[in-house]
Amino acid sequence: MVNRDRFSKLSFETNLFFQRIMKEHLFFIETNLQPAAPSHIAKAKKLKLSMEKLLAEAVHYSNCLISDNALKSNEFVTPYTLKAEEVTSALTGASLDMEITKAELKLVCDPRYSYENYFEAADSLNKRTYKLLQEVIKFQKELIEEDSACEIFIPLYPQMLEHDTHEAELYLSILESLVNMQMPELSTCDEVNFWNMIMAEHAEFFDGMLDPTEKELKALAAAAAEKFNELEDECTQATQIKLLNESKEATRKLKQYKVDIATGLLRCKIKSIIPPLLADHVLREANHYLRIMSNNPYMG
Ligand SMILES: [Fe+2]
Ligand SMILES: [Fe+2]
Image 1 (cartoon, rainbow, N blue to C red):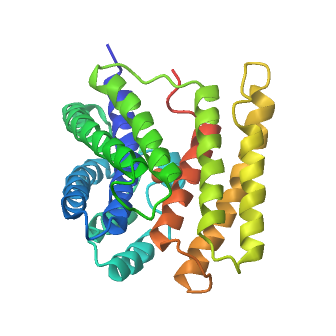
Image 2 (tube, helix red, strand yellow):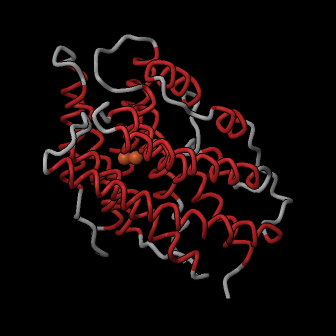
């Protein structure tokens, strides 16, 4: 039998982080598909709205319950999220429920609260999210296939569609354990290998999405990609501690770079095809990775 307190806490914290990430992937798809694919645009929007509803529910239950270190990690929202949403929604014309973000910015931690009474709510949320996420993954895989067959045009890198789907599959594997009433078990090496690959790809995306004239920022992105590519798949029992330290250092550096990109875009000081919300999105993923490296909640 799982510990109801630990189960509920991990469920809400996992959903708070990943549901927002998933709905933003759908937002990026919705806003990059072309008018020639109206049914895909409608589907992306519908899935985004469904995921937003579940996120609003997670936020509702999480107040007071959430742990201090998760809250302070800025992996759920950052100081830039709301502004990035306002700007990106206004410039694309696609909706983002910013009331959720405002509620998340007010979340507090109160260690006197027990998660135990929220066990049923957590279980129900996990099950509905699991079902929706399967649909999201199926949709994204269909897009990848159609894109690779040149049946649709979407100005998102094919590698980015794959990348988003890998993140969705990691989330699905965590939810799969939770819906089966088991605590997810992801070793530090599993996490480090996965997230170092993700960090390398973020740097590659930025390198490719910055204007060719932004030479300095592009060079920094290329150097970060090279560093993470070196670190990728190096993790074994023997190398784990050294790799963890190097990964922490590289991720802290990349995190600062992402802050600079996000704030630069919001001040309209950087030439690129990076939507501000994407810069904030990848910043949250770095914050999540940093928290996992200092205290892995997915290890028994
Ligand atoms: Fe993502
Ligand atoms: Fe990512």
